[in-house]
Figure 1 (cartoon, rainbow, N blue to C red):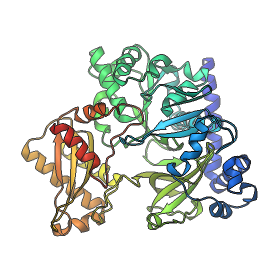
Figure 2 (figure 1 turned 90 degrees about the vertical axis):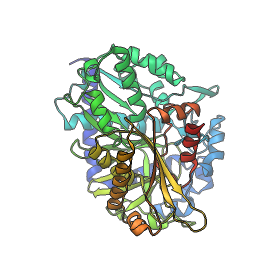
Figure 3 (figure 1 turned 135 degrees about the vertical axis):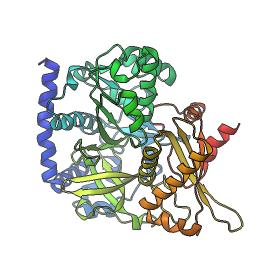
Figure 4 (figure 1 turned 30 degrees about the vertical axis):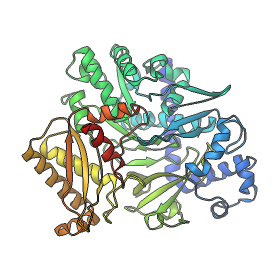
Length: 507
Protein backbone atom coordinates (compact mmCIF):
# COMPACT_ATOMS: atom_id res chain seq x y z
CA UNK A 1 0.00 0.00 0.00
CA UNK A 2 1.38 3.43 -0.96
CA UNK A 3 2.00 6.19 1.57
CA UNK A 4 -0.95 8.20 0.24
CA UNK A 5 -3.29 5.21 0.46
CA UNK A 6 -2.09 4.56 4.03
CA UNK A 7 -3.08 8.12 4.99
CA UNK A 8 -6.55 7.61 3.49
CA UNK A 9 -7.02 4.32 5.37
CA UNK A 10 -6.00 5.86 8.70
CA UNK A 11 -8.35 8.84 8.24
CA UNK A 12 -11.25 6.59 7.25
CA UNK A 13 -10.89 4.31 10.28
CA UNK A 14 -10.74 7.28 12.64
CA UNK A 15 -13.77 9.02 11.13
CA UNK A 16 -15.98 5.93 11.15
CA UNK A 17 -15.51 5.71 14.93
CA UNK A 18 -16.42 9.40 15.30
CA UNK A 19 -19.51 9.03 13.10
CA UNK A 20 -20.66 6.05 15.16
CA UNK A 21 -20.25 8.23 18.26
CA UNK A 22 -22.57 11.01 17.10
CA UNK A 23 -25.10 8.45 15.86
CA UNK A 24 -25.26 7.01 19.40
CA UNK A 25 -25.26 10.38 21.19
CA UNK A 26 -26.79 12.92 18.76
CA UNK A 27 -28.19 15.36 21.32
CA UNK A 28 -24.97 15.46 23.36
CA UNK A 29 -22.97 16.15 20.20
CA UNK A 30 -25.30 18.97 19.14
CA UNK A 31 -25.14 20.50 22.63
CA UNK A 32 -21.35 20.42 22.43
CA UNK A 33 -21.49 22.16 19.03
CA UNK A 34 -23.84 24.80 20.42
CA UNK A 35 -21.62 25.52 23.44
CA UNK A 36 -18.54 25.69 21.23
CA UNK A 37 -20.13 28.21 18.86
CA UNK A 38 -21.28 30.50 21.68
CA UNK A 39 -17.96 30.32 23.54
CA UNK A 40 -15.87 31.02 20.44
CA UNK A 41 -18.00 33.98 19.32
CA UNK A 42 -18.79 35.82 22.55
CA UNK A 43 -16.10 38.45 21.92
CA UNK A 44 -17.05 39.12 18.30
CA UNK A 45 -19.10 42.20 17.48
CA UNK A 46 -22.12 40.00 16.83
CA UNK A 47 -21.60 38.07 20.06
CA UNK A 48 -21.26 41.20 22.17
CA UNK A 49 -24.30 42.81 20.55
CA UNK A 50 -26.45 39.74 21.24
CA UNK A 51 -25.20 39.03 24.75
CA UNK A 52 -23.36 35.77 24.08
CA UNK A 53 -21.47 36.09 27.38
CA UNK A 54 -24.79 35.71 29.21
CA UNK A 55 -26.25 32.93 27.02
CA UNK A 56 -26.31 29.73 29.05
CA UNK A 57 -29.03 27.78 27.27
CA UNK A 58 -30.54 27.22 23.86
CA UNK A 59 -33.72 28.99 24.96
CA UNK A 60 -31.76 32.15 25.88
CA UNK A 61 -29.96 31.91 22.53
CA UNK A 62 -33.32 31.87 20.72
CA UNK A 63 -34.49 34.82 22.80
CA UNK A 64 -31.37 36.91 22.15
CA UNK A 65 -30.76 36.11 18.49
CA UNK A 66 -33.40 36.63 15.79
CA UNK A 67 -33.88 34.34 12.83
CA UNK A 68 -31.85 35.63 9.88
CA UNK A 69 -31.50 35.36 6.14
CA UNK A 70 -28.73 36.69 3.92
CA UNK A 71 -30.15 40.20 3.87
CA UNK A 72 -30.15 40.25 7.67
CA UNK A 73 -26.43 39.45 7.81
CA UNK A 74 -25.32 41.21 4.62
CA UNK A 75 -24.00 44.39 6.25
CA UNK A 76 -21.82 42.32 8.60
CA UNK A 77 -20.60 40.09 5.76
CA UNK A 78 -19.77 43.16 3.65
CA UNK A 79 -17.53 44.43 6.45
CA UNK A 80 -15.82 41.04 6.67
CA UNK A 81 -15.24 41.19 2.92
CA UNK A 82 -13.42 44.50 3.43
CA UNK A 83 -11.06 42.78 5.88
CA UNK A 84 -12.59 43.76 9.24
CA UNK A 85 -11.95 41.23 12.00
CA UNK A 86 -14.07 39.70 14.78
CA UNK A 87 -17.40 40.60 13.19
CA UNK A 88 -19.50 37.42 12.90
CA UNK A 89 -16.73 34.95 13.73
CA UNK A 90 -13.40 35.36 15.55
CA UNK A 91 -10.44 36.63 13.57
CA UNK A 92 -10.41 37.50 9.88
CA UNK A 93 -12.52 35.60 7.38
CA UNK A 94 -10.46 35.41 4.21
CA UNK A 95 -12.68 33.34 1.91
CA UNK A 96 -16.18 33.96 0.59
CA UNK A 97 -18.18 31.53 -1.53
CA UNK A 98 -20.00 33.37 -4.29
CA UNK A 99 -23.39 31.76 -4.70
CA UNK A 100 -26.59 32.63 -6.47
CA UNK A 101 -28.37 29.38 -5.61
CA UNK A 102 -30.65 29.93 -8.62
CA UNK A 103 -30.42 31.66 -11.99
CA UNK A 104 -31.23 35.04 -10.42
CA UNK A 105 -28.84 37.91 -11.04
CA UNK A 106 -28.22 38.59 -7.37
CA UNK A 107 -25.10 37.03 -5.85
CA UNK A 108 -24.50 36.09 -2.26
CA UNK A 109 -21.08 36.03 -0.63
CA UNK A 110 -21.14 33.32 2.01
CA UNK A 111 -18.30 33.53 4.58
CA UNK A 112 -16.03 30.48 4.73
CA UNK A 113 -13.88 30.62 7.87
CA UNK A 114 -10.80 28.49 8.45
CA UNK A 115 -12.85 26.41 10.88
CA UNK A 116 -15.74 25.84 8.48
CA UNK A 117 -13.33 24.93 5.69
CA UNK A 118 -11.46 22.38 7.84
CA UNK A 119 -14.18 21.08 10.18
CA UNK A 120 -17.15 21.17 7.80
CA UNK A 121 -16.40 21.20 4.08
CA UNK A 122 -13.16 19.19 4.16
CA UNK A 123 -14.58 16.83 6.76
CA UNK A 124 -17.59 16.23 4.54
CA UNK A 125 -15.31 15.29 1.66
CA UNK A 126 -13.38 12.84 3.85
CA UNK A 127 -16.59 11.36 5.23
CA UNK A 128 -17.98 10.64 1.76
CA UNK A 129 -15.00 8.39 1.15
CA UNK A 130 -15.04 6.99 4.68
CA UNK A 131 -18.68 5.91 4.52
CA UNK A 132 -18.28 4.49 1.03
CA UNK A 133 -15.18 2.53 2.04
CA UNK A 134 -16.95 1.32 5.20
CA UNK A 135 -19.83 -0.03 3.10
CA UNK A 136 -17.59 -1.46 0.37
CA UNK A 137 -14.43 -2.92 1.86
CA UNK A 138 -13.05 -4.13 -1.48
CA UNK A 139 -13.13 -0.70 -3.12
CA UNK A 140 -10.20 0.36 -5.29
CA UNK A 141 -11.06 4.03 -5.64
CA UNK A 142 -7.81 5.10 -3.98
CA UNK A 143 -5.73 3.35 -6.63
CA UNK A 144 -6.62 5.93 -9.30
CA UNK A 145 -7.51 9.61 -9.63
CA UNK A 146 -10.48 11.59 -8.34
CA UNK A 147 -12.13 13.73 -11.00
CA UNK A 148 -13.58 16.85 -9.37
CA UNK A 149 -15.99 18.87 -11.52
CA UNK A 150 -15.79 22.23 -9.78
CA UNK A 151 -17.32 25.60 -10.36
CA UNK A 152 -16.78 28.00 -13.20
CA UNK A 153 -15.50 30.94 -11.18
CA UNK A 154 -11.82 31.49 -10.53
CA UNK A 155 -10.48 32.79 -7.24
CA UNK A 156 -10.81 36.59 -7.22
CA UNK A 157 -9.16 39.05 -4.82
CA UNK A 158 -11.27 41.21 -2.52
CA UNK A 159 -8.33 42.97 -0.91
CA UNK A 160 -4.71 42.14 -0.06
CA UNK A 161 -5.60 39.00 1.90
CA UNK A 162 -9.21 38.14 1.01
CA UNK A 163 -10.73 36.14 -1.86
CA UNK A 164 -14.01 34.92 -3.32
CA UNK A 165 -15.10 32.31 -5.83
CA UNK A 166 -17.29 29.22 -6.16
CA UNK A 167 -17.12 27.06 -3.07
CA UNK A 168 -15.66 24.23 -5.14
CA UNK A 169 -12.88 26.55 -6.33
CA UNK A 170 -12.13 27.60 -2.75
CA UNK A 171 -11.94 23.96 -1.67
CA UNK A 172 -9.66 23.00 -4.57
CA UNK A 173 -7.41 25.98 -3.84
CA UNK A 174 -6.95 24.87 -0.21
CA UNK A 175 -6.71 21.09 -0.56
CA UNK A 176 -3.84 19.40 1.33
CA UNK A 177 -1.02 18.07 -0.84
CA UNK A 178 -1.91 14.41 -0.38
CA UNK A 179 -5.45 15.04 -1.69
CA UNK A 180 -4.25 17.25 -4.55
CA UNK A 181 -1.86 14.45 -5.58
CA UNK A 182 -4.86 12.20 -6.23
CA UNK A 183 -7.06 14.79 -7.96
CA UNK A 184 -7.56 15.63 -11.63
CA UNK A 185 -7.56 17.96 -13.60
CA UNK A 186 -4.62 20.12 -12.50
CA UNK A 187 -5.43 23.30 -10.63
CA UNK A 188 -4.74 25.65 -13.56
CA UNK A 189 -7.57 23.99 -15.51
CA UNK A 190 -9.85 23.39 -12.51
CA UNK A 191 -9.96 27.11 -11.72
CA UNK A 192 -10.60 28.39 -15.24
CA UNK A 193 -13.52 30.80 -15.34
CA UNK A 194 -14.75 30.36 -18.94
CA UNK A 195 -16.92 27.27 -18.76
CA UNK A 196 -16.78 25.94 -22.32
CA UNK A 197 -13.01 26.35 -22.59
CA UNK A 198 -12.67 24.70 -19.20
CA UNK A 199 -14.81 21.70 -20.21
CA UNK A 200 -12.73 21.14 -23.34
CA UNK A 201 -9.45 21.24 -21.41
CA UNK A 202 -10.83 19.08 -18.60
CA UNK A 203 -11.97 16.45 -21.09
CA UNK A 204 -8.61 16.45 -22.88
CA UNK A 205 -6.60 16.02 -19.68
CA UNK A 206 -8.81 13.73 -17.62
CA UNK A 207 -9.43 11.30 -20.49
CA UNK A 208 -5.72 10.40 -20.21
CA UNK A 209 -5.98 9.59 -16.48
CA UNK A 210 -7.07 6.49 -14.58
CA UNK A 211 -10.21 7.99 -13.03
CA UNK A 212 -11.79 5.80 -10.35
CA UNK A 213 -14.25 8.29 -8.83
CA UNK A 214 -16.02 11.49 -9.83
CA UNK A 215 -17.64 14.21 -7.74
CA UNK A 216 -19.77 17.07 -9.01
CA UNK A 217 -23.21 18.47 -9.75
CA UNK A 218 -25.07 15.99 -12.04
CA UNK A 219 -26.09 18.54 -14.68
CA UNK A 220 -22.62 19.95 -15.33
CA UNK A 221 -20.78 16.65 -14.84
CA UNK A 222 -22.98 15.18 -17.57
CA UNK A 223 -21.77 17.88 -19.96
CA UNK A 224 -18.16 16.92 -19.20
CA UNK A 225 -18.79 13.20 -19.71
CA UNK A 226 -20.43 13.87 -23.06
CA UNK A 227 -17.40 15.93 -24.09
CA UNK A 228 -15.06 13.11 -23.01
CA UNK A 229 -16.95 10.69 -25.26
CA UNK A 230 -16.89 13.20 -28.10
CA UNK A 231 -13.12 13.73 -28.10
CA UNK A 232 -12.20 10.08 -27.46
CA UNK A 233 -14.72 8.52 -29.82
CA UNK A 234 -15.68 6.04 -27.09
CA UNK A 235 -19.25 4.82 -26.82
CA UNK A 236 -19.31 4.66 -23.01
CA UNK A 237 -17.42 6.32 -20.17
CA UNK A 238 -16.26 2.91 -18.93
CA UNK A 239 -14.31 2.48 -22.18
CA UNK A 240 -12.33 5.59 -21.24
CA UNK A 241 -12.09 4.88 -17.52
CA UNK A 242 -12.45 1.10 -17.02
CA UNK A 243 -11.74 1.41 -13.28
CA UNK A 244 -14.42 4.04 -12.66
CA UNK A 245 -16.33 2.91 -9.59
CA UNK A 246 -18.15 5.81 -7.92
CA UNK A 247 -19.97 9.06 -8.70
CA UNK A 248 -20.50 11.36 -5.68
CA UNK A 249 -23.16 13.94 -6.54
CA UNK A 250 -25.10 16.78 -4.94
CA UNK A 251 -26.58 20.19 -5.63
CA UNK A 252 -29.67 18.97 -7.50
CA UNK A 253 -31.78 15.83 -7.43
CA UNK A 254 -30.19 12.91 -9.25
CA UNK A 255 -33.51 11.26 -10.18
CA UNK A 256 -33.96 12.99 -13.58
CA UNK A 257 -30.37 12.16 -14.54
CA UNK A 258 -29.86 8.58 -13.37
CA UNK A 259 -31.03 6.85 -16.54
CA UNK A 260 -28.90 9.02 -18.82
CA UNK A 261 -25.88 8.44 -16.56
CA UNK A 262 -26.35 4.70 -16.74
CA UNK A 263 -26.30 4.92 -20.53
CA UNK A 264 -23.32 7.26 -20.62
CA UNK A 265 -21.28 5.11 -18.27
CA UNK A 266 -22.38 1.78 -19.72
CA UNK A 267 -25.43 -0.26 -18.83
CA UNK A 268 -23.41 -3.48 -18.67
CA UNK A 269 -20.77 -1.99 -16.37
CA UNK A 270 -22.66 -0.17 -13.60
CA UNK A 271 -20.99 1.99 -10.96
CA UNK A 272 -22.02 3.12 -7.48
CA UNK A 273 -23.67 6.47 -6.73
CA UNK A 274 -23.35 8.43 -3.48
CA UNK A 275 -25.58 11.43 -2.80
CA UNK A 276 -24.49 14.34 -0.66
CA UNK A 277 -26.34 17.32 0.78
CA UNK A 278 -24.02 20.29 0.75
CA UNK A 279 -24.11 23.98 -0.07
CA UNK A 280 -21.98 27.10 0.23
CA UNK A 281 -23.41 27.57 3.73
CA UNK A 282 -22.29 24.15 4.94
CA UNK A 283 -22.01 20.42 4.40
CA UNK A 284 -25.11 18.85 5.92
CA UNK A 285 -25.46 15.20 5.00
CA UNK A 286 -24.20 12.11 3.19
CA UNK A 287 -25.96 9.04 1.87
CA UNK A 288 -25.43 6.47 4.62
CA UNK A 289 -25.91 3.19 2.79
CA UNK A 290 -25.76 2.13 -0.86
CA UNK A 291 -29.07 0.31 -0.48
CA UNK A 292 -31.01 3.46 0.46
CA UNK A 293 -31.09 7.04 -0.80
CA UNK A 294 -31.60 8.40 2.73
CA UNK A 295 -29.05 10.95 3.91
CA UNK A 296 -27.39 10.89 7.31
CA UNK A 297 -27.52 14.33 8.97
CA UNK A 298 -23.93 15.08 9.98
CA UNK A 299 -23.96 16.48 13.50
CA UNK A 300 -20.29 17.22 14.31
CA UNK A 301 -19.39 19.69 11.54
CA UNK A 302 -19.64 22.86 13.62
CA UNK A 303 -23.29 23.38 12.62
CA UNK A 304 -26.10 23.70 15.17
CA UNK A 305 -29.51 22.82 13.76
CA UNK A 306 -33.00 24.16 14.36
CA UNK A 307 -36.14 23.35 12.39
CA UNK A 308 -39.25 25.37 11.54
CA UNK A 309 -42.43 23.27 11.27
CA UNK A 310 -44.54 23.86 8.19
CA UNK A 311 -47.33 25.39 10.29
CA UNK A 312 -44.94 28.20 11.30
CA UNK A 313 -43.51 29.13 7.89
CA UNK A 314 -45.81 32.07 7.17
CA UNK A 315 -45.73 33.55 10.68
CA UNK A 316 -43.88 36.77 11.42
CA UNK A 317 -41.86 35.17 14.23
CA UNK A 318 -41.87 31.44 13.55
CA UNK A 319 -41.01 29.04 16.35
CA UNK A 320 -38.21 26.55 15.91
CA UNK A 321 -37.74 23.09 17.36
CA UNK A 322 -34.64 20.94 17.93
CA UNK A 323 -33.74 17.39 16.98
CA UNK A 324 -35.41 15.96 20.07
CA UNK A 325 -38.79 17.28 18.88
CA UNK A 326 -38.82 16.44 15.17
CA UNK A 327 -41.09 13.75 13.74
CA UNK A 328 -40.78 11.55 10.68
CA UNK A 329 -42.63 12.40 7.47
CA UNK A 330 -43.15 16.06 8.43
CA UNK A 331 -41.70 18.87 6.30
CA UNK A 332 -39.36 21.28 8.11
CA UNK A 333 -37.44 24.35 7.06
CA UNK A 334 -33.84 24.09 8.21
CA UNK A 335 -32.12 26.78 10.30
CA UNK A 336 -28.37 26.71 10.92
CA UNK A 337 -25.82 28.42 13.15
CA UNK A 338 -22.30 27.74 11.91
CA UNK A 339 -18.58 28.01 12.57
CA UNK A 340 -18.44 30.62 9.80
CA UNK A 341 -20.72 33.03 11.65
CA UNK A 342 -24.09 32.36 10.05
CA UNK A 343 -26.39 32.81 13.04
CA UNK A 344 -29.87 31.25 13.05
CA UNK A 345 -29.66 31.38 9.27
CA UNK A 346 -32.61 30.31 7.13
CA UNK A 347 -30.98 28.73 4.09
CA UNK A 348 -34.35 28.13 2.42
CA UNK A 349 -34.14 24.33 2.28
CA UNK A 350 -36.88 22.00 3.47
CA UNK A 351 -36.32 18.45 4.63
CA UNK A 352 -38.22 15.47 5.98
CA UNK A 353 -36.89 13.00 8.54
CA UNK A 354 -37.18 9.39 7.49
CA UNK A 355 -35.58 8.04 10.68
CA UNK A 356 -34.87 9.42 14.16
CA UNK A 357 -32.25 6.84 15.14
CA UNK A 358 -30.02 7.71 13.41
CA UNK A 359 -31.28 11.05 12.10
CA UNK A 360 -31.83 10.36 8.41
CA UNK A 361 -33.33 12.91 6.04
CA UNK A 362 -34.49 13.54 2.51
CA UNK A 363 -34.45 16.98 0.91
CA UNK A 364 -38.01 18.08 0.18
CA UNK A 365 -37.11 21.22 -1.75
CA UNK A 366 -36.70 24.94 -1.29
CA UNK A 367 -39.06 27.21 0.60
CA UNK A 368 -39.08 29.46 -2.46
CA UNK A 369 -39.01 26.67 -5.03
CA UNK A 370 -42.45 25.14 -4.95
CA UNK A 371 -45.84 25.88 -6.49
CA UNK A 372 -48.64 26.84 -4.15
CA UNK A 373 -50.61 29.26 -6.28
CA UNK A 374 -53.89 27.38 -5.79
CA UNK A 375 -53.30 25.65 -2.45
CA UNK A 376 -51.72 22.60 -4.10
CA UNK A 377 -48.37 22.82 -2.22
CA UNK A 378 -46.43 21.01 -4.94
CA UNK A 379 -42.88 20.36 -3.68
CA UNK A 380 -39.80 19.43 -5.67
CA UNK A 381 -39.70 15.90 -4.27
CA UNK A 382 -43.20 15.40 -5.77
CA UNK A 383 -42.16 16.59 -9.21
CA UNK A 384 -38.88 14.67 -9.27
CA UNK A 385 -40.54 11.38 -8.33
CA UNK A 386 -43.45 11.84 -10.74
CA UNK A 387 -41.14 12.64 -13.64
CA UNK A 388 -38.94 9.66 -12.81
CA UNK A 389 -41.96 7.33 -13.02
CA UNK A 390 -43.25 8.85 -16.26
CA UNK A 391 -39.86 8.67 -17.95
CA UNK A 392 -39.48 5.04 -16.95
CA UNK A 393 -42.89 4.18 -18.38
CA UNK A 394 -42.18 5.96 -21.67
CA UNK A 395 -38.48 5.02 -21.88
CA UNK A 396 -37.28 8.61 -22.20
CA UNK A 397 -34.89 10.85 -20.29
CA UNK A 398 -35.24 14.40 -18.98
CA UNK A 399 -32.37 16.81 -19.54
CA UNK A 400 -33.86 19.77 -17.68
CA UNK A 401 -37.16 21.32 -16.68
CA UNK A 402 -38.89 24.14 -14.84
CA UNK A 403 -42.52 24.83 -13.99
CA UNK A 404 -44.74 27.60 -12.70
CA UNK A 405 -48.40 28.56 -12.34
CA UNK A 406 -50.61 30.09 -15.01
CA UNK A 407 -53.43 32.34 -13.83
CA UNK A 408 -56.48 32.88 -16.01
CA UNK A 409 -58.28 36.20 -15.91
CA UNK A 410 -62.02 36.65 -15.25
CA UNK A 411 -62.31 33.80 -12.77
CA UNK A 412 -61.16 31.08 -15.17
CA UNK A 413 -59.30 28.11 -13.76
CA UNK A 414 -55.52 28.11 -13.81
CA UNK A 415 -53.01 25.36 -14.46
CA UNK A 416 -49.34 24.50 -14.10
CA UNK A 417 -47.15 25.29 -17.07
CA UNK A 418 -44.08 23.09 -17.56
CA UNK A 419 -41.07 23.58 -19.81
CA UNK A 420 -39.30 20.26 -20.30
CA UNK A 421 -36.28 19.23 -22.34
CA UNK A 422 -36.05 15.53 -23.22
CA UNK A 423 -33.37 13.44 -24.86
CA UNK A 424 -35.67 12.98 -27.86
CA UNK A 425 -38.68 14.73 -29.32
CA UNK A 426 -42.17 13.36 -28.73
CA UNK A 427 -44.87 13.30 -31.36
CA UNK A 428 -48.23 14.87 -30.55
CA UNK A 429 -49.76 11.59 -29.38
CA UNK A 430 -46.91 10.73 -26.99
CA UNK A 431 -46.80 14.32 -25.72
CA UNK A 432 -50.43 13.97 -24.64
CA UNK A 433 -49.66 10.64 -22.97
CA UNK A 434 -46.74 12.25 -21.10
CA UNK A 435 -48.96 15.08 -19.85
CA UNK A 436 -51.68 12.71 -18.69
CA UNK A 437 -49.23 10.39 -16.92
CA UNK A 438 -47.47 13.28 -15.16
CA UNK A 439 -50.79 14.60 -13.91
CA UNK A 440 -51.80 11.16 -12.64
CA UNK A 441 -48.53 10.59 -10.80
CA UNK A 442 -48.64 14.03 -9.15
CA UNK A 443 -52.14 13.21 -7.90
CA UNK A 444 -50.85 9.99 -6.37
CA UNK A 445 -47.93 11.73 -4.68
CA UNK A 446 -49.65 14.90 -3.43
CA UNK A 447 -53.14 14.87 -1.93
CA UNK A 448 -53.41 18.68 -2.07
CA UNK A 449 -52.68 18.65 -5.79
CA UNK A 450 -55.15 15.81 -6.25
CA UNK A 451 -57.87 17.76 -4.43
CA UNK A 452 -57.33 20.88 -6.55
CA UNK A 453 -57.37 18.80 -9.73
CA UNK A 454 -60.53 16.86 -8.78
CA UNK A 455 -62.97 17.38 -11.65
CA UNK A 456 -60.90 20.43 -12.67
CA UNK A 457 -62.36 22.29 -9.72
CA UNK A 458 -59.41 24.67 -9.26
CA UNK A 459 -56.70 23.39 -11.58
CA UNK A 460 -56.88 22.27 -15.16
CA UNK A 461 -54.63 19.69 -16.78
CA UNK A 462 -50.98 20.87 -16.91
CA UNK A 463 -49.66 22.44 -20.09
CA UNK A 464 -46.24 21.22 -21.20
CA UNK A 465 -43.79 22.75 -23.68
CA UNK A 466 -41.25 20.20 -24.94
CA UNK A 467 -38.04 21.94 -26.02
CA UNK A 468 -35.29 20.83 -28.38
CA UNK A 469 -32.16 19.30 -26.88
CA UNK A 470 -29.70 21.93 -25.66
CA UNK A 471 -32.30 24.65 -25.06
CA UNK A 472 -31.68 25.04 -21.33
CA UNK A 473 -27.91 25.01 -21.84
CA UNK A 474 -28.15 27.78 -24.45
CA UNK A 475 -30.47 29.82 -22.21
CA UNK A 476 -28.11 29.51 -19.25
CA UNK A 477 -25.15 30.41 -21.47
CA UNK A 478 -26.87 33.55 -22.69
CA UNK A 479 -27.44 34.57 -19.08
CA UNK A 480 -23.81 33.88 -18.15
CA UNK A 481 -24.91 31.10 -15.80
CA UNK A 482 -22.94 28.08 -17.00
CA UNK A 483 -21.36 25.72 -14.47
CA UNK A 484 -20.71 25.84 -10.76
CA UNK A 485 -23.48 26.77 -8.39
CA UNK A 486 -25.83 27.87 -11.16
CA UNK A 487 -28.97 25.77 -11.35
CA UNK A 488 -32.30 25.96 -13.12
CA UNK A 489 -35.05 26.31 -10.48
CA UNK A 490 -37.35 23.32 -10.92
CA UNK A 491 -40.49 24.88 -9.46
CA UNK A 492 -41.42 28.48 -8.82
CA UNK A 493 -44.48 30.24 -7.46
CA UNK A 494 -43.90 32.95 -10.05
CA UNK A 495 -43.59 32.77 -13.84
CA UNK A 496 -40.11 34.33 -13.97
CA UNK A 497 -38.25 31.24 -15.14
CA UNK A 498 -40.98 29.73 -17.34
CA UNK A 499 -41.46 33.03 -19.14
CA UNK A 500 -37.71 33.61 -19.30
CA UNK A 501 -36.88 30.45 -21.21
CA UNK A 502 -40.01 30.57 -23.38
CA UNK A 503 -39.22 34.16 -24.38
CA UNK A 504 -35.68 33.08 -25.25
CA UNK A 505 -36.86 30.11 -27.33
CA UNK A 506 -39.45 32.19 -29.18
CA UNK A 507 -37.13 35.07 -30.10
